[in-house]
Length: 140
Image (cartoon, rainbow, N blue to C red):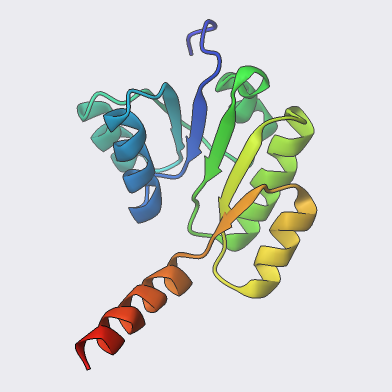
């Protein structure tokens, strides 16, 4: 990893949500590094020209390798709530001032992520269902 990486965003997970996050960051020329554990997803991201590390974002050493100490924000978009919670705890421990956005799948986990130090929580299923209901109500 380039040691000069600073003021960047770390994106953890290249699933559906993480893919959208890096697409938007890339489109806005925001410096970021992606952390992904799945080798096939790492290869896909590399083919798109993204800066990517293969590794487990829940591990301190992996976050340190992504220069978390000098990052301005981290987007934690793993598919597993427990891993998201653990990554929030680890990220907050390694960088007290970093902005942490995290994914949650239910309200209980949402509360735990806030307690762990997340600044912003997204609940994709809830957001999608609200959009669908809004459109259904408009049509009727």
